[in-house]
Image (cartoon, rainbow, N blue to C red; front, side, top):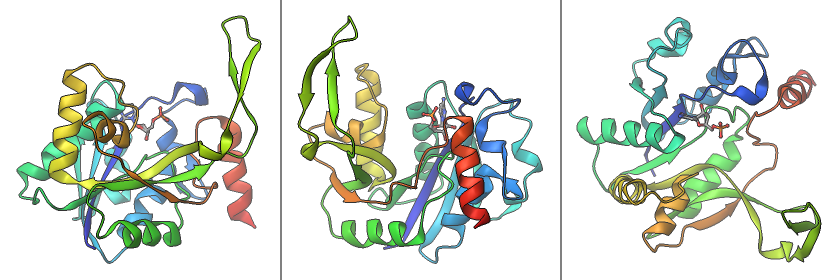
Length: 228
Ligand code: C5P
């Protein structure tokens, strides 16, 4: 199906210990966020893309992709969910239909494979709720006590890591995010807002290398991988 994309990119990325937010760090000759946007701009189903940028951000305007007609900028908010909500509100104001699909994807995930994007779109095209790319837990998982000792081993066969893109209908996601934020619920991804209103998003298995760049070594790993 055709779809809109919302890319939250208003974080500061303090864990990178870098001189600028991680989405602007250089990776294989471009800013990291330019690779992220390319995954979507190269897709024929894209209707348009909204990127949420911090209000005083000096880096975004100098990027080539800021000039692309399909890319619109909005001001991000204090938390990731606020930045996503700003992007969704912009889409609604610009005439997107409430039944349109929206894919929300972290700016800090530049290694989204086209195959994963197509599988997500294909598997959820007729889904009543929507869903997300996710990766099954690989390691043995422990629940810890406050004293740093193991309380129990968790059954990993039912545990998945939530990745992005996350794909929901514009109206449903707007309503869910607004309701969850107003109630003060913990909204760390779009699926958690959808869950909060009682729906069950579908998990679509994705590649583990669609990682969110969080620490300096993540960037080095991608750089080496792409060099090969
Ligand atoms: O900090 P973290 O890696 O979890 O952020 C995930 C994504 O959300 C990043 O692309 C970041 O720029 C974005 N974000 C945002 N607005 C915030 C905080 C994070 O758009 N207030």
